[in-house]
Structure formats: structure tokens, C-alpha cells
Length: 442
Image 1 (cartoon, rainbow, N blue to C red):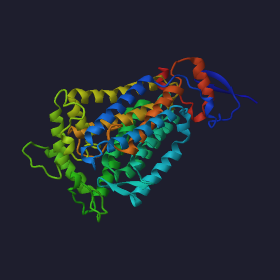
Image 2 (image 1 turned 45 degrees about the horizontal axis):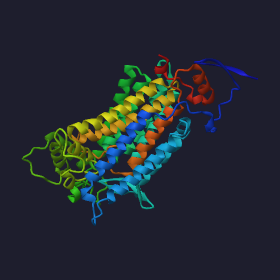
Image 3 (image 1 turned 180 degrees about the vertical axis):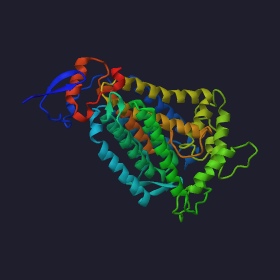
Image 4 (image 1 turned 120 degrees about the horizontal axis):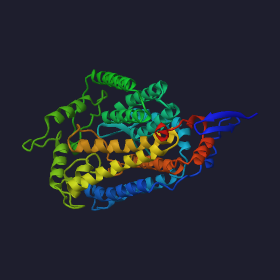
């Protein structure tokens, strides 16, 4: 017997059974991959190759000047292959695998806490077959996919339901509690992305304020728990990087507190260079050398003296090479990415793909902004790679996956406003992806 179900597009017949989401070919591509996202991605890859080579002076060993560039290019190539693969997968696949991916990333994160290796003072990675995997980078993207699923399922004409807000906040608090051990900025980034998606989905100001209050209380509690126990944390002079002593098990509280104090005090030209201010000092010097148009690609002087010039401080090398003009152009590339995602997300007929593309874009762009803010002295020192530009295999692959997901949405989500196409998409989606995109309906 045929049951009649009412949808936003009218009345359609259904057998009452959920559509088979496993049959991926049912959802056909509506558009070619978005050329603007591809253009921004390729531009970032070109800048990455140039600037990584310029910033790798401290990594050159045995006269092999191309060694760091070759390793970096291999990961960029793997990332490109990942983008090409993911853009051909219908976005419903990411909804199906949201929970398994999130659970797997949490398991990897917990494993790295107990059996991992220390990187820049935090036990945030583990090695498999010679490759270093950093779960904090992975968990940020899987959290975005999971939040898109939860918010997409709880999108109503009036905005996000109360249940959706509560579930999202709970997930973020749990993941933030795990990420806090590996870095304060990761926790802040996670909370910012979740708040951005909730605002995009529509929420009353009263509920939004409650989210801020809950996040504030939870963050304060984590702060007190983490800093209540004294530690034997100390600074290591190797590479000018602050790391936790091998015999310290109490965390990085003195490192965090010291960074905040030095951020408030600032760096003055007459200050002596120490292991604690070396990064900030030479980063500012590199940016000063850049001037308006820069010294030219590959002509950086400070990359040989700046610790972590190839990762946490690579934006200072970008500014030294390409000046204020080049640094601003790179910033605009990231901003164009989130703007393009906003255009596509606004046109999506369903809520889930809109949340998915916006979540990936906000993750990439906000991480870039945090990196730039740290390097330019607007934020306290913290390790946060510049997406696609900084050295780091896990970060490159994760951000490439985010680009691939964005391209998948641009291909398979209906964005034309064609009622027939919207109806066809609706009939092929499972029940949990039927929620409409309220911005598309306005």
C-alpha cells in the first residue's frame, strides 16, 4: 500500500521505507566541480611549494637542499589525489560515516595520549610504519562532519531545534576536553566552528547566549582542573621550542601561562634574545624585512634563524618573501574560499550539504586566521599550522579532505532552484537528510 508523505516540494508517493543510502550512484552529479574552489586550492598549493622551500633552511642536511621540498610535495600530491577521489563521492557518504569516523578519531586521540610521541612539547601523535599521525588534526574535520549531520537532522523552518543545539554543544564539549590536552587553540577552534554553524542554521539569541555560557563554564572548569596540580614543566632550548620535560606528567600549564605573560608584555627591539622569545622575535624581524613588496621568493634571511619557520611560523616567511602585498593576497585567498562556500551553501536545497560545506570552509579559514594572528602578534604563541602551506603530512591530508568534501557538495547538491531537480534529490535522500535549507527557501 502506498503511503502519501508531504514534503516541502509538494506530495510524493513512498512505500514508507527509507531510501537505500548504500546505493551511492542514485545521487547523480548536478554540476561540475566548482572552478573557484579548485582555483583557490591550486593557488595555495603553488604558494606552499615556493614558501616551504624558502622556509626550510634549518632542515637542509647533507647538502640535499631539495629534500624537505620533495617530502612536502609528496604529501601535497597525496592530498591532491584525496581531493580528486572525494569530489566524486556523493555527499550522503559523509553523513553515513560521520559517527564511525568520529569514534575512530577519538580512539586515535586517546591512544596518542598514552602511547604517542611528543611534538613541540605535547604528546599529540603516534607513528605507524614510519609515518607520524596527529589525531588532533583529524578529529577537527571529523567533528565538522558530525556537527553537520546533527544540525542537518535538527534543522527546522524556525532554525536549529533545542535538541540539535544541546547535542552539538555536548559533542563539542567532549571533544574539546580531549583536545585541551593537546593544545588550547584546538579547543577554541572547535568551539568557534560549532558556534558558526549554529548561527548559520538559525538560533535565538537567548539560546546562543546559553551556548556561550556553557562553553565558558566548561572552559573555566578545564582550566582549573589542568592548573590545579603543580608540574615540573620546563623550557627546552633545542630549536628555541618550549617542550614538556620527559619526567613531567602534569601537563603544559607553565608553558601556557608563560606564553600568555610574554604576549601581554610584548617584545621590544632592545630585549635580549632568549629561548623563550626567540620565535616571536625573529618572526617579527622577518615581517619587518618584508616591507611592502617583500624580498622575493626564496630570499628569506630569517628562515635560517627562526625556529619552526617551516610550520608554526611560515606566514612570517611568506610576508618576508612577498611583503605586505603578498601576505594580504594570501589572506584574501582564504577569505574567498569561505565566501565561495557561503554562496554554494546558500543555494543548497537541503540543510546537511549546506552545513557540511560551510563547516569545512570555516575550519580551514579560521585555522588560517589563527595562525596569522599568532605570527603577527595578535594572539599568544601556540602551534597551529597554516592550511596547505605549513609542513605537516597529517594537516595537509586533513585539509585536502576538507576541500574534497566541499567539491563533493558543489557537484552533488542541488543548487539551481530547479523544482524537478530538488524533487529528484529529495526522493533519493534518506529520511535523516530531508531537512530543508532555510536560507534556500527565503
